[in-house]
Length: 255
Image (tube, rainbow, N blue to C red):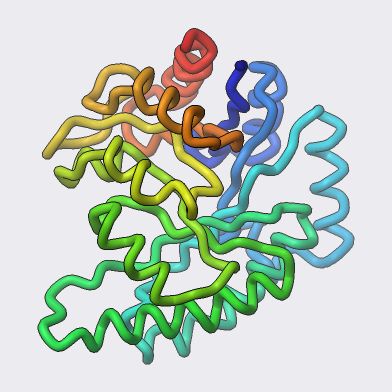
């Protein structure tokens, strides 16, 4: 079965329009985009501009697999989230207008939590914002990497909302010393989106296929367990992001 391949257009470090043109040139099916800066910020994109953006990517034969609302969040920090939540809610509404049903983000790490108070705050915040997302037909997908799969699943189950899912990033898990394949098994009921990214165990990010993520095994397990969503290529390091992303497209097509 051919994979649904996408690119995170911001990874190309080009203007968004150029990134979309490259995605169309590579004939990928979909893309992801940040809503946290420049022209894509909700306040800079009135309703007419949102409709125009949808038309532009549709005319290129693309789908929007997910938006990214990574506003420097920490769902354990109630005061921070009080300040950030309006941005998050606006981005969820913007995602609806851009015809994306998934928005990815980082929710922060529990860190040292001897009395369980941080976990309780995180679960409550996930519940509140997740319910808001679900009411708008959106899943807020937390990115993996800071917790083990088992630990993250426990937090998501404690939140108990259909509006929270997982954006599975195998490289983040590997780079932080976790077992990415075991995490797939533990998190599959929540996985709605994935980043195709590679990295070295205990080290940094590498081009796809050059790190310690076992992509053949990873994709095989995801498929076996029922995942049919997008594999969105993300490249956050390196001197030649366009070249690396183009090679990554070819690599995924060869699996």
